[in-house]
Image 1 (spheres, protein in one colour):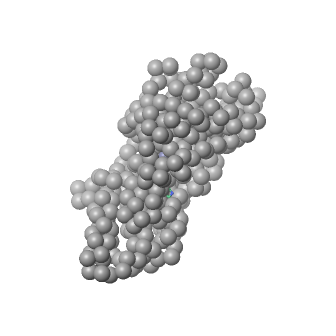
Image 2: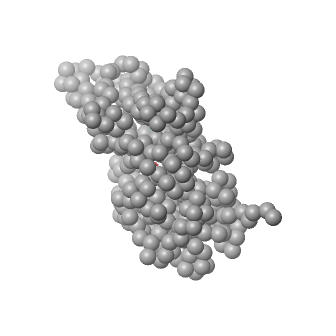
Image 3: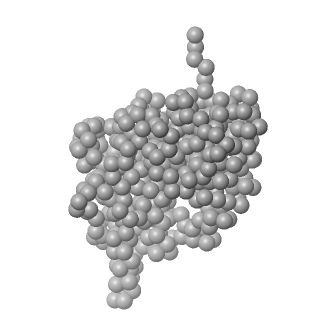
Length: 343
Ligand code: KG4
Ligand code: ZN
């Protein structure tokens, strides 16, 4: 007898995108609606949590309806509701969690809380039907930079992390310093194409007692110091060269740790995930480094790198299949850690 297809309605509101998706059997995206608030937040140079919460409240219902419409289904054809419950901004998270609970209460559909970072990792399943654990994943997002071992579905272990700033945070701070505005990552990515990555030698941090750990705050300070020095000595600032040289330093550090991890954990598959995984130079460098050692490198399309509900639908599917069900006491957990959710 054929297995019944499982459809998950997923909701993501952890930061500044209101997103809903319908995902079938954890791999097939039937719809993925993303309503971005970037145009509002860029006026303030970053995400304003209170404004984000209010916008999520306005958008969540139409975004969920559109996701169902585009997937050509109604709630009676859905098997479970997946929702991000952390980590993220508490107000925005609460909007998604409350909305998911309301749908679950009204329809009696099971509720499955999802860890946002685990969702980022699961984005890799969408376009790689044969990807199965165990594998390594470097997660580089706006708020997190972690090297994770995915031992099994629902079994995530942190192997290393950033000691200070996340990779995306470094992109955003440096972009602000050179006057590119928010969000910095895509803007640096674009401007760097016009600059020389070898023009300025910025430092690559090494954490002595934990060689796989990352650190980006020294690099950010080096960029600021370089700019101050130029200003004081009257040397003209070439923003494209700064963008390209800074980006090269970030990319070198991330790729170096990924290659070290392949050696240390004696595996030949590594994935990339999170907003910074959309960076064109990082993707190219990973492809090259993995090619050279015959390792398999897997990365999501840009739309599945930055925040989206499809990845939450994938993660929710695997939790649902493990029998995970949340109650109406599911709450937002702003500092939720990887692997700290359902056991
Ligand atoms: O994963 P994400 O959407 O949100 C979090 O969970 O934090 O990541 C957002 C981060 C931002 O810092 C943004 O600047 C960065 O990802 N980002 C990029 C690119 N696109 C987004 N960084 C570098 N290059 C990009 N193309
Ligand atoms: Zn994210």
